[in-house]
Length: 220
Image (cartoon, rainbow, N blue to C red; front, side, top):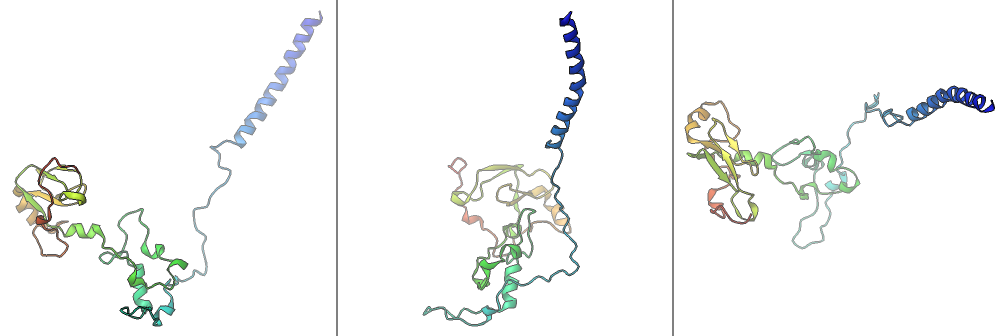
């Protein structure tokens, strides 16, 4: 008689405590769940009632001539206005950035590292995105042309480009433009094109005589 009574009491107690334990475990899991953000980040900047004006990073002491301690060197001296213009310009041939992930030069060249630095002595390479659009179109009578960037160590793997559409097709590696001769009249009738259709004599143009190799099976 005692065994059935003990079993019934255990079953009653288990049914009473099971929902309570389950609810407590669910609450603990919800509190530490990765899907519930416990720390919120405010991405909206605070409204500053008195915003500070951007302070140039160029030191005014650069305007004072300093001996360069060299027999053939001139005195280290630079105007603050000129230095600030060089510091904030992205490239000599482009004022702004050309990629979403690119950091503006004005932000990169700031801080103690660039204080009291002669800015016109810092590297200022040309922007390749502007230089490539100085290259004239390479006209061809073939539907498919190949490009290896000129070959040699400065070239790239040989790729084949389809030119049968009425458009300028740039190389995916180096950006050199190609177009079919049958589409010349149509391209010339357009108000403007992304590449010059003929040579303009710009110093940035790459002459075809600079090609290193002509074969198609060299090691790249």
